[in-house]
Image 1 (cartoon, rainbow over the protein chains, first blue to last red):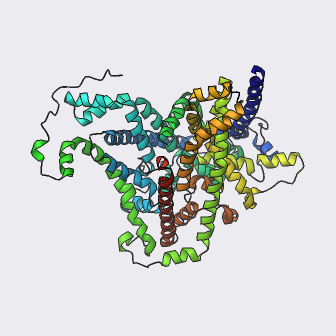
Image 2 (cartoon, rainbow over the protein chains, first blue to last red):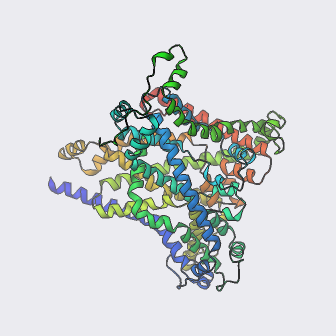
Image 3 (cartoon, chains in turn brown, yellow):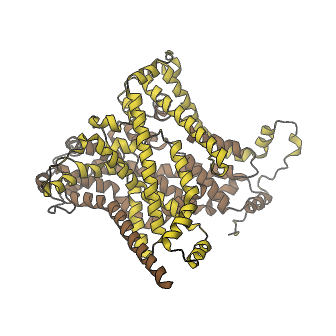
Length: 296
Length: 326
C-alpha cells in the first residue's frame, strides 16, 4: 500500500518538475537571449546573427548609452515622475472612494458602486477619450496626459473595497464615530494605516502599469522632452539610426553606433529597475493577485 | 488589531436626523453623510470626465466629424459611416481576427494556466517550486515594447535567433513576417508566456482553498495522486475557471491592442490575418483619416461588447446565479 502511494507520487513529481521546469525555462530564455545579444560584438552579430549565448564580448552598446545619456536620463526622469505622481493620486482616490463604498451606513453605496462598475462593461473605447483629451481638455503635449488616462482603475477600486471589508471590522468605525471622529478623519487616521498591505500591493501594480505605458505617449505626446522610457525604446526599435542620431546630437560620440546590439542594450536599460526590484517585491504581487482572485 | 489611534473627542459632534424629516431621502442622506459624499466627489468627477462624458463621442459615428466643429457641431450623416466601414470589407476581417485570436487565447491559455497551477501546487520541493514560480511570473512585468524587442530578437530575418539556429542546421531561413499563418502560433505563445504566471496564481489560490481533509480521505481510500487531481482538484477549480472564462467572453471583442501593435506592428502583409478591431481603430485614428468611420468601428465594438456581456451574464444568472457578474 505504502509502496504504491510512493510510486505515484514519484511519477507525479518527475512529470511536474519536468513540465514546470520547462515552462520556467521558456519564460526565462528570451531574457537570456536579450542580455547575451546586448553584450555581443556587433560585427559577430552582423555576420552570424543572434544566438542564445553571447557572440564575442563587447560593452560598446552600453558605452554608447553612457556617453550619450541625455535623452535616456530625461526619459527616466519623465517615467519616474509620472509613475510616482500617478501612484500617489491613484492610491488616494481609490482608497478614499473604496472606503466610502465600503461604509454600510452609506445608503447609496450600491448605486455608486454600480456607476463605477458600469464603466467596465460599457465604454466608448479609445476614440472618445482621445477626442476628450485633445479637443476639450487640451492635454496634448502635457505631462498630465501621461498620468490622467486610466488613473482610477475600477477593478482595483473593487478589489480595494473588498480588501477593506475583509480587514477593517465594522465596530472600529462605530466606536470612532461614537468618539466623535468625522468620516474623513476615520479614513485618514484609522483606515489608511490598517490597509497598508492593500495600498502597497495595488500601488505596485499601478507602478508596473505606468512604468510600462507607452500608448499614452504615442497618442498625446509629440514633445521629445516628455517621452517616457518605453516610448523612447519603442521609437528606437522602429529605427535605430534616426534615434541614435537624435541621441548623439549634442556632440561627437566616441563610440561608433552598434545598432543591432544597441537595441537590446536599451531594452535592458529600460527594464533594469523592474528586474532588480522584482525579487524583493514578488510576494506583494502574489498577494495582490490573491486579493483580486478572492473577489473573482 | 484594535489598538486604534485615539480619536479626538468632540470633533464635529452634531445632532442629526430628526429635524430634516420631510426632505427627499437623497437630501436626508446627503445631510447625514455630507463628508462621505464629499469624499466621493473627486472620483465621481473623474469618471464623469473620462468615462461618461466621452460616451457622447460615440455620436461621431453618425456624423461627419471635423475638428473645427467638434462633436456637437459636425453635421449628421446618418448611417453613412457604418455603411462605409462595412462596405470596405475591413469590418468582417477585423471582427473575425479579434474573435479567432481571443478564442485561441482563452482556450489554450486556460489549459496551460490550469495545468501549471495543478502541477505547481501538488509538487514537492519548496525551493524549486518557488524559483519556477518566480521565473513564470517574470514576463508579466515586462511591457509589450520589451516583448516586441524580444520577438524582433528571435524572428528578425537577417539576425534573429531562430534563423541563426536554422542556418546552423543548414535549413533555409524563414521570414515569419511574410507568413501570416505562423502568427496563429506566435501570438498565442507570447500571450500565454506573458500571463501564465499571473493566471496560474489565481488557480493556485483556488486549489489552496480546498479542504485538505477531502484529499486526505481520498488518499486513505487508496486514490493515487492522479485520481485525486482528476476527481478533487479539477472539480474544485470549476467555479474559478467558469468565472475567468466569463470575464474573457465578456471581452471577446476587445483585442489586446498593445500586444498586436507591438508584435505585429506595421507589417501590413500580415494584416489580413492579424489585424484586430483595436489596432484598426488605432491606426486609422493616428493617421487622422476619416474620424467618422473610425468611430463607427468603435461604436460597433462597444455596443457588441455590451450586448455580449449582458447576454452572458443573463444566461449565467439563469443557470448558476452564484457566478453572475452583476
